[in-house]
Every structure is written in C-alpha cells, then in structure tokens.
Length: 116
Image (cartoon, rainbow, N blue to C red; front, side):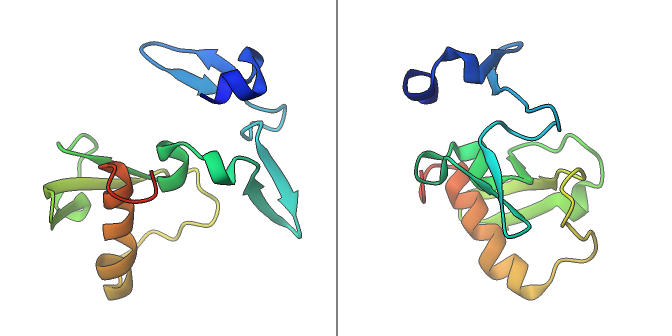
C-alpha cells in the first residue's frame, strides 16, 4: 500500500475512497518535471487509476454521448470517457490505432488483466 511506504500524509480520505494529496500547483504529489514532461514518481507501483488516466472505463454510460464513449471488446460493452483536464488530450474522432491498440490496453488494465 502506498501510504505504508510513503506515510499516511500522502493520502486524503474522501467519500468511499482515498485520494493522493495535491501539491500547491494542483498536481499529484508524486509528479515531477523532467525535461518539460511531467512524470510519476510511482512508476513501478502506480495505481490502476493512474495507469489509465486520463481515461475512465465504466460498465454503464454516465456522461452522455454514449455512442462516442461505447466500445465493444473482449469484456463486453464498456464506456470509455476522457478527463478533459488532461492538457495533452485532443478530442475528436477515434483513430484506428487508438481503437485497436491503445483503448484495448486501457480496458485490460482496468479489468486487471494487464499491468496491474
């Protein structure tokens, strides 16, 4: 568990879950800047939610635009949403590469079959 390794001060309790505390610039306390790219200091122990960010994979639609979020794959129908706060995300039509390579990897991670 992360709090056992880094201390209980790295987490903040919320409703039904715990969150990593934020730095004064609102970034995760484990992020650091390397050559103008923000990286995670938890790379080897990264939590599932961090591995798939800025995507959220859900069994049921929640945010509208169900057709755009829907993906049918080996786990059945799922809905994949993107966090619009990600500064490098470009919203638009899914590319073939994204649909065939990237999206399945994130869904595998979410369901614990890869990289967990």
